[in-house]
Image 1 (cartoon, rainbow, N blue to C red):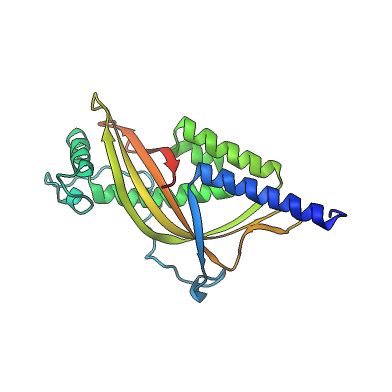
Image 2 (image 1 turned 90 degrees about the horizontal axis):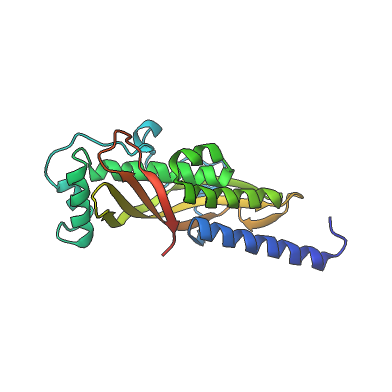
Length: 231
């Protein structure tokens, strides 16, 4: 413990501020707290139905669907910029199905968010492109260097919606950007066990905009996380 209480408070405030900046720059915006009783640590239940099995959702696998665009229309007007881009992706990726993609995106979001919060670099390395992985890994290393411990619980995804899609000029690669709004319970403590960010008894709402990309027509079914940010 520090001998001077004022120095201690200033130091903890600086650590918390720096960590919050790193989390926002790597992941996105964190805002708002709620506290329904059923979400308290140790309580059962979730705001959403159980997530799909990891084998079905993490790989964002292609699906053998129909040739119509009803799967796209469920998420975007077909004549909109987003709808047109998704149709172009589907032309280059005949097995592409938007509903299957979104289910996979939600599963990947939960898995990768938790991997970041718990410092699981091995999982992150499998599904992030090099630039995004380096940013995540740097934030994890900085957190560890400050002896900060993160205790986190994923409550559930409130909403997930595609907001943008692109296909490269040569039509060999495609990107789909998804906006997620989710809820977690997080507490960050220093080496002395003192709380420096979050609240273990409250829910924190988070908002992220993630971009997934892949080589269209590739035999590898995975979409990689290629960019993160907030609105």
